[in-house]
Length: 131
Length: 359
Image (cartoon, each protein chain N blue to C red):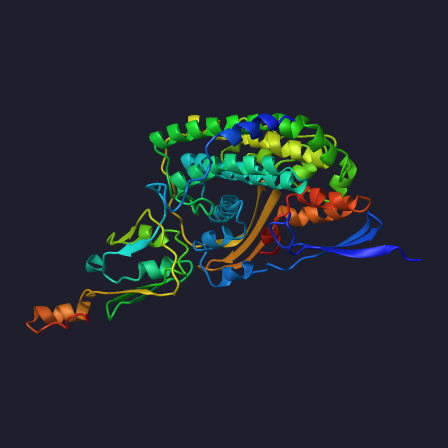
Protein backbone atom coordinates (compact mmCIF):
# COMPACT_ATOMS: atom_id res chain seq x y z
CA UNK A 1 0.00 0.00 0.00
CA UNK A 2 2.84 2.36 0.84
CA UNK A 3 4.16 2.02 -2.72
CA UNK A 4 0.86 3.11 -4.28
CA UNK A 5 1.59 6.83 -3.92
CA UNK A 6 4.95 6.31 -5.56
CA UNK A 7 3.50 4.26 -8.41
CA UNK A 8 0.83 6.88 -9.13
CA UNK A 9 3.42 9.65 -9.05
CA UNK A 10 5.63 7.76 -11.49
CA UNK A 11 2.66 7.07 -13.72
CA UNK A 12 1.99 10.75 -14.25
CA UNK A 13 5.65 11.84 -14.32
CA UNK A 14 7.88 11.84 -17.38
CA UNK A 15 10.14 8.79 -17.86
CA UNK A 16 13.38 8.59 -15.88
CA UNK A 17 15.26 7.49 -18.99
CA UNK A 18 16.21 9.60 -22.01
CA UNK A 19 15.04 8.78 -25.50
CA UNK A 20 18.52 7.70 -26.60
CA UNK A 21 19.93 8.05 -29.30
CA UNK A 22 17.72 11.07 -30.15
CA UNK A 23 18.57 12.67 -26.84
CA UNK A 24 22.11 12.13 -25.60
CA UNK A 25 23.59 13.18 -22.27
CA UNK A 26 26.67 15.36 -22.27
CA UNK A 27 29.65 13.31 -21.05
CA UNK A 28 31.19 14.24 -17.69
CA UNK A 29 34.49 16.09 -18.29
CA UNK A 30 36.38 13.66 -16.04
CA UNK A 31 35.15 10.55 -17.89
CA UNK A 32 37.91 8.18 -18.98
CA UNK A 33 37.08 7.74 -22.64
CA UNK A 34 39.02 7.10 -25.84
CA UNK A 35 42.78 7.49 -25.93
CA UNK A 36 44.50 9.65 -28.50
CA UNK A 37 48.21 9.89 -29.23
CA UNK A 38 49.57 13.12 -30.74
CA UNK A 39 52.31 11.13 -32.42
CA UNK A 40 54.37 14.17 -33.52
CA UNK A 41 55.32 14.76 -29.87
CA UNK A 42 55.79 11.06 -29.05
CA UNK A 43 59.36 9.99 -28.26
CA UNK A 44 58.54 6.25 -28.40
CA UNK A 45 59.90 5.69 -24.89
CA UNK A 46 57.56 2.69 -24.30
CA UNK A 47 56.53 3.96 -20.85
CA UNK A 48 52.87 3.53 -21.82
CA UNK A 49 53.44 -0.02 -23.09
CA UNK A 50 55.27 -1.00 -19.89
CA UNK A 51 52.63 0.37 -17.49
CA UNK A 52 49.59 -0.89 -19.44
CA UNK A 53 47.97 -3.63 -17.31
CA UNK A 54 46.23 -5.27 -20.26
CA UNK A 55 49.08 -5.08 -22.79
CA UNK A 56 47.02 -2.99 -25.21
CA UNK A 57 49.95 -0.84 -26.37
CA UNK A 58 52.93 -2.08 -28.38
CA UNK A 59 55.71 0.37 -29.19
CA UNK A 60 58.41 -0.16 -31.79
CA UNK A 61 61.00 2.39 -30.67
CA UNK A 62 63.37 1.81 -33.58
CA UNK A 63 60.73 1.86 -36.29
CA UNK A 64 58.74 4.72 -34.73
CA UNK A 65 55.50 2.82 -34.52
CA UNK A 66 52.80 3.04 -31.81
CA UNK A 67 50.12 0.34 -31.90
CA UNK A 68 47.11 0.51 -29.64
CA UNK A 69 44.33 -2.06 -29.40
CA UNK A 70 41.16 -0.29 -28.16
CA UNK A 71 39.50 -3.66 -27.62
CA UNK A 72 42.17 -4.80 -25.15
CA UNK A 73 42.32 -1.43 -23.41
CA UNK A 74 40.64 -1.21 -19.98
CA UNK A 75 40.62 2.63 -20.04
CA UNK A 76 42.41 2.93 -16.70
CA UNK A 77 44.40 5.97 -17.92
CA UNK A 78 47.65 4.66 -16.39
CA UNK A 79 49.45 5.33 -19.71
CA UNK A 80 48.15 8.90 -19.90
CA UNK A 81 49.50 9.64 -16.42
CA UNK A 82 52.84 8.00 -17.16
CA UNK A 83 53.49 9.70 -20.52
CA UNK A 84 56.56 11.96 -20.07
CA UNK A 85 55.77 14.22 -23.05
CA UNK A 86 52.00 14.41 -22.41
CA UNK A 87 51.34 13.38 -26.00
CA UNK A 88 48.80 10.79 -24.80
CA UNK A 89 45.41 12.31 -24.13
CA UNK A 90 42.19 10.77 -22.88
CA UNK A 91 39.00 12.23 -24.24
CA UNK A 92 35.73 12.29 -22.31
CA UNK A 93 33.77 10.51 -25.04
CA UNK A 94 33.57 6.75 -25.27
CA UNK A 95 34.43 4.69 -28.32
CA UNK A 96 31.36 3.83 -30.35
CA UNK A 97 30.34 0.27 -31.15
CA UNK A 98 32.14 -1.42 -34.00
CA UNK A 99 31.49 -4.46 -36.16
CA UNK A 100 35.17 -5.29 -36.71
CA UNK A 101 38.10 -5.34 -34.35
CA UNK A 102 41.03 -3.17 -35.30
CA UNK A 103 44.31 -1.81 -33.98
CA UNK A 104 45.07 1.92 -34.02
CA UNK A 105 48.53 2.16 -35.52
CA UNK A 106 50.45 5.43 -35.60
CA UNK A 107 53.83 6.11 -37.16
CA UNK A 108 56.18 8.92 -36.28
CA UNK A 109 59.84 9.82 -36.12
CA UNK A 110 61.68 8.31 -33.20
CA UNK A 111 64.34 10.47 -31.53
CA UNK A 112 67.80 9.83 -32.87
CA UNK A 113 69.86 7.26 -31.08
CA UNK A 114 72.65 8.69 -28.97
CA UNK A 115 75.28 7.14 -31.16
CA UNK A 116 73.71 8.51 -34.32
CA UNK A 117 73.58 11.96 -32.75
CA UNK A 118 77.27 11.82 -31.94
CA UNK A 119 77.98 10.78 -35.49
CA UNK A 120 75.74 13.55 -36.77
CA UNK A 121 77.68 16.12 -34.77
CA UNK A 122 80.83 14.89 -36.51
CA UNK A 123 79.36 15.92 -39.83
CA UNK A 124 77.83 12.60 -40.89
CA UNK A 125 74.21 12.42 -41.84
CA UNK A 126 72.10 10.87 -39.09
CA UNK A 127 69.63 8.14 -40.09
CA UNK A 128 66.15 9.55 -40.48
CA UNK A 129 63.21 7.86 -38.77
CA UNK A 130 61.03 5.60 -40.83
CA UNK A 131 57.69 6.95 -41.84
CA UNK B 1 8.03 -44.91 -1.33
CA UNK B 2 10.60 -42.17 -1.91
CA UNK B 3 8.72 -38.87 -2.27
CA UNK B 4 11.73 -36.65 -2.88
CA UNK B 5 12.41 -34.79 -6.12
CA UNK B 6 15.58 -33.02 -7.18
CA UNK B 7 15.09 -29.49 -8.57
CA UNK B 8 18.07 -27.67 -10.09
CA UNK B 9 18.34 -23.94 -9.32
CA UNK B 10 20.68 -21.95 -11.54
CA UNK B 11 23.28 -21.40 -12.94
CA UNK B 12 20.84 -19.40 -15.11
CA UNK B 13 17.88 -18.22 -13.06
CA UNK B 14 15.83 -15.00 -13.26
CA UNK B 15 16.72 -13.92 -9.72
CA UNK B 16 20.40 -14.74 -9.94
CA UNK B 17 22.59 -12.04 -11.45
CA UNK B 18 25.49 -14.48 -11.42
CA UNK B 19 25.89 -18.21 -12.03
CA UNK B 20 25.38 -20.26 -8.89
CA UNK B 21 23.99 -23.77 -9.08
CA UNK B 22 22.17 -25.38 -6.17
CA UNK B 23 20.51 -28.78 -6.34
CA UNK B 24 17.44 -28.84 -4.13
CA UNK B 25 16.13 -32.12 -2.84
CA UNK B 26 12.46 -31.38 -2.11
CA UNK B 27 9.73 -33.35 -0.47
CA UNK B 28 6.41 -31.96 -1.74
CA UNK B 29 7.11 -28.22 -1.44
CA UNK B 30 9.63 -28.41 1.39
CA UNK B 31 13.36 -28.36 0.81
CA UNK B 32 15.13 -31.26 2.52
CA UNK B 33 18.66 -30.76 1.27
CA UNK B 34 20.64 -28.18 -0.73
CA UNK B 35 23.81 -29.13 -2.60
CA UNK B 36 25.76 -26.18 -4.06
CA UNK B 37 28.01 -26.25 -7.11
CA UNK B 38 30.40 -23.42 -7.87
CA UNK B 39 33.02 -22.81 -10.51
CA UNK B 40 31.16 -21.31 -13.47
CA UNK B 41 33.03 -18.01 -13.56
CA UNK B 42 36.53 -18.91 -12.41
CA UNK B 43 38.96 -16.64 -14.26
CA UNK B 44 42.27 -17.34 -12.50
CA UNK B 45 42.83 -13.71 -11.52
CA UNK B 46 44.96 -14.62 -8.47
CA UNK B 47 47.56 -16.32 -10.64
CA UNK B 48 48.03 -13.10 -12.64
CA UNK B 49 50.29 -11.83 -9.82
CA UNK B 50 53.11 -13.76 -11.46
CA UNK B 51 52.79 -11.93 -14.78
CA UNK B 52 51.66 -8.43 -13.79
CA UNK B 53 53.73 -6.18 -11.56
CA UNK B 54 52.35 -5.11 -8.19
CA UNK B 55 51.22 -1.71 -9.46
CA UNK B 56 49.37 -3.20 -12.43
CA UNK B 57 47.67 -5.71 -10.13
CA UNK B 58 45.54 -2.89 -8.68
CA UNK B 59 43.64 -2.83 -11.97
CA UNK B 60 43.31 -6.63 -11.95
CA UNK B 61 41.97 -6.90 -8.38
CA UNK B 62 39.40 -4.22 -9.22
CA UNK B 63 37.99 -6.58 -11.79
CA UNK B 64 37.45 -9.40 -9.29
CA UNK B 65 34.07 -7.88 -8.44
CA UNK B 66 31.91 -5.62 -10.56
CA UNK B 67 30.02 -4.17 -7.60
CA UNK B 68 32.67 -3.39 -5.00
CA UNK B 69 35.71 -2.96 -7.24
CA UNK B 70 36.99 0.09 -5.36
CA UNK B 71 36.96 -1.79 -2.04
CA UNK B 72 39.01 -4.66 -3.50
CA UNK B 73 41.61 -2.16 -4.72
CA UNK B 74 41.54 -0.39 -1.35
CA UNK B 75 42.26 -3.66 0.48
CA UNK B 76 45.03 -4.69 -1.91
CA UNK B 77 46.71 -1.27 -1.78
CA UNK B 78 46.59 -1.26 2.03
CA UNK B 79 48.16 -4.74 2.15
CA UNK B 80 51.03 -3.66 -0.13
CA UNK B 81 51.46 -0.35 1.73
CA UNK B 82 51.78 -2.27 5.01
CA UNK B 83 54.50 -4.39 3.45
CA UNK B 84 56.35 -1.35 2.12
CA UNK B 85 55.95 0.49 5.43
CA UNK B 86 54.23 3.52 3.91
CA UNK B 87 50.91 5.13 4.77
CA UNK B 88 48.65 6.90 2.32
CA UNK B 89 48.29 10.66 3.00
CA UNK B 90 45.25 11.80 5.05
CA UNK B 91 43.37 13.21 2.05
CA UNK B 92 43.82 9.93 0.18
CA UNK B 93 42.50 8.02 3.22
CA UNK B 94 39.36 10.16 3.25
CA UNK B 95 38.88 9.90 -0.50
CA UNK B 96 39.20 6.13 -0.25
CA UNK B 97 36.43 6.10 2.35
CA UNK B 98 34.22 8.32 0.17
CA UNK B 99 34.54 6.13 -2.90
CA UNK B 100 34.26 2.91 -0.86
CA UNK B 101 31.07 4.12 0.77
CA UNK B 102 29.67 5.21 -2.61
CA UNK B 103 30.26 1.64 -3.73
CA UNK B 104 28.54 0.31 -0.64
CA UNK B 105 25.52 2.54 -1.33
CA UNK B 106 25.21 1.44 -4.94
CA UNK B 107 25.73 -2.21 -4.01
CA UNK B 108 23.05 -2.08 -1.33
CA UNK B 109 20.62 -0.22 -3.60
CA UNK B 110 21.22 -2.81 -6.31
CA UNK B 111 20.62 -5.56 -3.77
CA UNK B 112 17.46 -3.96 -2.36
CA UNK B 113 16.11 -3.82 -5.91
CA UNK B 114 17.03 -7.43 -6.67
CA UNK B 115 15.62 -8.54 -3.33
CA UNK B 116 12.31 -6.83 -4.13
CA UNK B 117 12.41 -8.58 -7.51
CA UNK B 118 12.95 -11.92 -5.71
CA UNK B 119 9.72 -11.57 -3.75
CA UNK B 120 7.90 -10.23 -6.78
CA UNK B 121 7.65 -6.49 -6.06
CA UNK B 122 8.67 -5.17 -9.46
CA UNK B 123 7.85 -1.49 -8.90
CA UNK B 124 10.14 -1.37 -5.83
CA UNK B 125 12.89 -3.02 -7.89
CA UNK B 126 12.72 -0.34 -10.55
CA UNK B 127 12.42 2.49 -8.03
CA UNK B 128 15.62 1.41 -6.23
CA UNK B 129 17.53 1.13 -9.48
CA UNK B 130 16.29 4.55 -10.48
CA UNK B 131 17.59 6.05 -7.23
CA UNK B 132 20.88 4.21 -7.73
CA UNK B 133 21.63 6.24 -10.87
CA UNK B 134 22.58 9.20 -8.63
CA UNK B 135 25.49 7.21 -7.20
CA UNK B 136 26.56 5.98 -10.61
CA UNK B 137 26.60 9.59 -11.84
CA UNK B 138 28.69 10.69 -8.85
CA UNK B 139 31.18 7.89 -9.54
CA UNK B 140 31.37 8.75 -13.23
CA UNK B 141 31.78 12.47 -12.64
CA UNK B 142 34.42 12.14 -9.93
CA UNK B 143 36.37 8.99 -10.77
CA UNK B 144 35.80 8.76 -14.51
CA UNK B 145 33.81 5.55 -14.65
CA UNK B 146 30.54 4.19 -13.33
CA UNK B 147 31.74 0.95 -11.76
CA UNK B 148 35.45 0.31 -12.22
CA UNK B 149 36.70 3.48 -10.58
CA UNK B 150 40.47 2.88 -10.81
CA UNK B 151 41.13 5.61 -8.26
CA UNK B 152 43.30 3.62 -5.86
CA UNK B 153 47.01 3.22 -6.41
CA UNK B 154 49.62 1.79 -4.07
CA UNK B 155 50.52 4.77 -1.88
CA UNK B 156 47.37 6.85 -2.27
CA UNK B 157 44.76 7.83 -4.83
CA UNK B 158 44.93 9.22 -8.36
CA UNK B 159 42.01 11.62 -8.44
CA UNK B 160 41.03 14.56 -6.30
CA UNK B 161 37.73 16.28 -5.60
CA UNK B 162 37.36 19.97 -6.36
CA UNK B 163 35.18 22.22 -4.12
CA UNK B 164 32.64 22.45 -6.98
CA UNK B 165 32.48 18.68 -7.25
CA UNK B 166 31.99 18.38 -3.48
CA UNK B 167 29.09 20.86 -3.60
CA UNK B 168 27.50 18.99 -6.50
CA UNK B 169 28.03 15.65 -4.73
CA UNK B 170 26.31 16.92 -1.59
CA UNK B 171 23.31 18.01 -3.68
CA UNK B 172 23.15 14.62 -5.37
CA UNK B 173 23.45 12.84 -2.02
CA UNK B 174 20.50 14.85 -0.68
CA UNK B 175 18.42 13.79 -3.67
CA UNK B 176 19.53 10.21 -3.15
CA UNK B 177 18.67 10.24 0.54
CA UNK B 178 15.26 11.66 -0.23
CA UNK B 179 14.67 8.80 -2.64
CA UNK B 180 15.83 6.15 -0.16
CA UNK B 181 13.74 7.60 2.69
CA UNK B 182 10.77 7.64 0.35
CA UNK B 183 11.11 3.86 0.12
CA UNK B 184 11.54 3.31 3.86
CA UNK B 185 7.87 2.64 4.65
CA UNK B 186 7.59 0.16 1.79
CA UNK B 187 10.69 -1.78 2.80
CA UNK B 188 10.21 -1.63 6.57
CA UNK B 189 6.46 -1.52 7.22
CA UNK B 190 4.66 -2.93 4.20
CA UNK B 191 2.47 -5.93 5.00
CA UNK B 192 3.27 -7.79 1.75
CA UNK B 193 7.02 -7.33 2.15
CA UNK B 194 6.93 -8.52 5.74
CA UNK B 195 4.84 -11.58 4.83
CA UNK B 196 7.42 -12.63 2.26
CA UNK B 197 10.53 -12.00 4.37
CA UNK B 198 9.74 -12.19 8.10
CA UNK B 199 10.56 -15.51 9.78
CA UNK B 200 12.09 -16.90 6.58
CA UNK B 201 15.66 -18.18 6.37
CA UNK B 202 16.30 -17.77 10.07
CA UNK B 203 19.93 -17.91 11.18
CA UNK B 204 20.26 -17.91 14.96
CA UNK B 205 22.90 -15.83 16.71
CA UNK B 206 24.86 -18.92 17.70
CA UNK B 207 24.67 -20.55 14.25
CA UNK B 208 25.83 -17.34 12.57
CA UNK B 209 28.99 -17.44 14.64
CA UNK B 210 29.58 -21.18 14.34
CA UNK B 211 29.09 -21.23 10.58
CA UNK B 212 31.33 -18.19 10.08
CA UNK B 213 28.81 -15.80 8.52
CA UNK B 214 30.07 -12.37 7.47
CA UNK B 215 28.73 -8.89 6.88
CA UNK B 216 25.01 -8.09 6.95
CA UNK B 217 24.22 -11.81 7.30
CA UNK B 218 26.17 -11.83 10.59
CA UNK B 219 24.93 -8.43 11.74
CA UNK B 220 21.34 -9.42 10.94
CA UNK B 221 21.77 -12.21 13.50
CA UNK B 222 22.75 -9.89 16.31
CA UNK B 223 26.55 -9.66 16.10
CA UNK B 224 28.06 -6.17 16.04
CA UNK B 225 30.95 -7.25 13.85
CA UNK B 226 32.12 -4.89 11.13
CA UNK B 227 35.68 -4.43 9.86
CA UNK B 228 35.14 -0.67 9.72
CA UNK B 229 35.11 -0.73 13.52
CA UNK B 230 38.86 -1.44 13.33
CA UNK B 231 39.23 2.02 11.85
CA UNK B 232 41.24 1.34 8.71
CA UNK B 233 41.60 4.19 6.17
CA UNK B 234 39.79 7.22 7.64
CA UNK B 235 37.05 5.30 9.47
CA UNK B 236 38.77 5.90 12.81
CA UNK B 237 38.13 9.62 12.39
CA UNK B 238 34.49 9.28 11.35
CA UNK B 239 31.46 8.50 13.48
CA UNK B 240 30.94 4.94 12.41
CA UNK B 241 28.41 2.77 14.22
CA UNK B 242 27.65 -0.78 13.00
CA UNK B 243 24.02 -1.53 12.13
CA UNK B 244 22.78 -4.59 14.02
CA UNK B 245 19.45 -6.42 13.95
CA UNK B 246 18.49 -9.31 16.21
CA UNK B 247 15.98 -11.50 14.34
CA UNK B 248 18.33 -13.27 11.92
CA UNK B 249 15.70 -13.67 9.17
CA UNK B 250 15.55 -12.25 5.63
CA UNK B 251 13.65 -9.22 6.92
CA UNK B 252 16.39 -8.44 9.46
CA UNK B 253 19.08 -8.71 6.80
CA UNK B 254 17.18 -6.38 4.48
CA UNK B 255 16.77 -3.92 7.36
CA UNK B 256 20.53 -4.03 8.04
CA UNK B 257 21.25 -3.17 4.40
CA UNK B 258 18.61 -0.47 4.27
CA UNK B 259 19.93 1.30 7.39
CA UNK B 260 23.53 0.79 6.24
CA UNK B 261 22.71 2.63 3.02
CA UNK B 262 21.52 5.62 5.03
CA UNK B 263 24.49 5.40 7.38
CA UNK B 264 26.91 5.26 4.44
CA UNK B 265 25.37 8.45 3.07
CA UNK B 266 26.02 10.10 6.44
CA UNK B 267 29.62 8.86 6.41
CA UNK B 268 30.19 10.24 2.89
CA UNK B 269 28.76 13.61 3.91
CA UNK B 270 30.90 13.71 7.04
CA UNK B 271 34.02 12.76 5.09
CA UNK B 272 33.30 15.40 2.43
CA UNK B 273 32.92 18.09 5.09
CA UNK B 274 36.10 17.07 6.90
CA UNK B 275 38.28 16.36 3.85
CA UNK B 276 41.81 17.34 4.98
CA UNK B 277 44.32 19.11 2.75
CA UNK B 278 47.37 17.02 1.81
CA UNK B 279 49.06 15.42 -1.15
CA UNK B 280 47.29 12.52 -2.84
CA UNK B 281 49.96 9.84 -2.92
CA UNK B 282 53.33 9.09 -1.37
CA UNK B 283 56.43 7.93 -3.21
CA UNK B 284 57.11 4.23 -2.86
CA UNK B 285 60.46 3.19 -1.38
CA UNK B 286 60.97 0.24 -3.74
CA UNK B 287 59.49 -3.17 -4.36
CA UNK B 288 57.55 -5.02 -1.66
CA UNK B 289 59.22 -7.81 0.28
CA UNK B 290 57.67 -10.13 2.84
CA UNK B 291 54.11 -11.07 3.74
CA UNK B 292 51.06 -9.01 4.49
CA UNK B 293 47.43 -9.48 5.40
CA UNK B 294 44.64 -6.92 5.28
CA UNK B 295 40.91 -6.97 5.96
CA UNK B 296 38.27 -4.48 4.91
CA UNK B 297 34.48 -4.40 4.98
CA UNK B 298 32.82 -5.04 1.65
CA UNK B 299 29.07 -4.46 1.19
CA UNK B 300 28.71 -8.23 1.70
CA UNK B 301 31.06 -8.63 4.63
CA UNK B 302 34.68 -9.09 5.49
CA UNK B 303 37.14 -9.13 2.61
CA UNK B 304 40.56 -10.63 3.28
CA UNK B 305 43.76 -10.25 1.25
CA UNK B 306 47.01 -12.14 1.75
CA UNK B 307 50.03 -11.12 -0.33
CA UNK B 308 53.58 -12.44 -0.37
CA UNK B 309 56.47 -10.81 -2.20
CA UNK B 310 60.17 -11.46 -2.59
CA UNK B 311 61.53 -8.00 -3.37
CA UNK B 312 60.85 -8.26 -7.09
CA UNK B 313 58.35 -6.38 -9.20
CA UNK B 314 55.95 -9.32 -9.30
CA UNK B 315 54.32 -10.69 -6.19
CA UNK B 316 54.82 -14.34 -5.30
CA UNK B 317 51.35 -15.17 -4.13
CA UNK B 318 48.04 -13.49 -3.56
CA UNK B 319 45.04 -14.99 -1.84
CA UNK B 320 41.60 -13.43 -1.60
CA UNK B 321 38.86 -14.56 0.71
CA UNK B 322 35.53 -13.02 -0.12
CA UNK B 323 32.44 -12.66 2.10
CA UNK B 324 30.17 -14.74 -0.15
CA UNK B 325 32.51 -17.69 0.35
CA UNK B 326 31.98 -17.27 4.11
CA UNK B 327 28.22 -16.90 3.68
CA UNK B 328 27.59 -20.08 1.68
CA UNK B 329 27.69 -22.47 4.70
CA UNK B 330 25.12 -20.31 6.58
CA UNK B 331 22.99 -20.26 3.40
CA UNK B 332 23.03 -24.05 3.21
CA UNK B 333 21.98 -24.13 6.85
CA UNK B 334 19.04 -21.74 6.21
CA UNK B 335 17.63 -23.53 3.18
CA UNK B 336 16.51 -26.97 4.49
CA UNK B 337 12.97 -26.72 5.80
CA UNK B 338 11.95 -23.74 3.68
CA UNK B 339 9.23 -23.77 1.06
CA UNK B 340 10.07 -23.79 -2.64
CA UNK B 341 8.81 -20.21 -3.38
CA UNK B 342 11.02 -18.87 -0.57
CA UNK B 343 14.25 -20.17 -2.15
CA UNK B 344 14.99 -17.03 -4.25
CA UNK B 345 14.35 -14.77 -1.24
CA UNK B 346 16.69 -16.77 1.03
CA UNK B 347 19.43 -17.18 -1.58
CA UNK B 348 19.40 -13.46 -2.32
CA UNK B 349 19.34 -12.53 1.35
CA UNK B 350 23.07 -13.32 1.67
CA UNK B 351 23.70 -11.10 -1.40
CA UNK B 352 25.69 -13.72 -3.31
CA UNK B 353 28.57 -12.39 -5.38
CA UNK B 354 29.81 -15.38 -7.31
CA UNK B 355 32.42 -13.55 -9.41
CA UNK B 356 34.11 -12.50 -6.17
CA UNK B 357 33.98 -16.00 -4.76
CA UNK B 358 35.44 -17.74 -7.79
CA UNK B 359 37.75 -15.02 -9.08
